[in-house]
Amino acid sequence: MPKCITYYFSPVSPWTYLGHARLGEIAARHGATIDYVPVTVSAVFPRTGGLPLPKRAPERQAYRLAELRRWPRLLGVPLNVEPKFFPADDRPAARLALTAKARGHDIAELTLAILRACWAEERDIADLATLGEIADACGLDGKALLQESEEEPGHQRLEDACEQAIGAGCFGVPWYDVEGEPFWGQDRLDLVEKKLAGEL
Image (cartoon, rainbow, N blue to C red; front, side, top):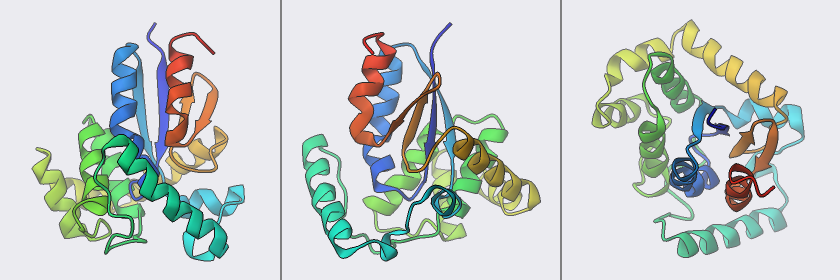
């Protein structure tokens, strides 16, 4: 049986963006599957001791910016350290992705497009029209998916996803669960790969 990575992420997280493509590459190398589970940090943080960025101490905010300057250079991933539309509400994008997933779509490409829109293209991913355009560009029916995602089933999917994440021990994003073993942050992807290779 192939190993499965359950991948909890926020579609507005720069760390999710920096690790997203690499996760797919690692999974492919090891024949692993990925279960994409978008969540909102507005539900996860309050229950797990996290703070939204504006409420963090200045020292923590400064170090975050230092890391955000280092990692894109190291990985060769384009990233605006302080994008125009950030912070942005991650819930509409998470609901859209979960609705697409519920309709049987592989949401890897959609997720990357949403992340790139925020962190490289200066687009507002909290804006429904923008999300519709992104979904359409990925070959999906943006209008239909958005309509469903903004109705009660879409809200329930996101609530359920957040409960699943918290139940798995997730307190930050991205969070990778490899058959019950947790790894927090894109800077742990080397360890995820070792786990898949049977070296951990």
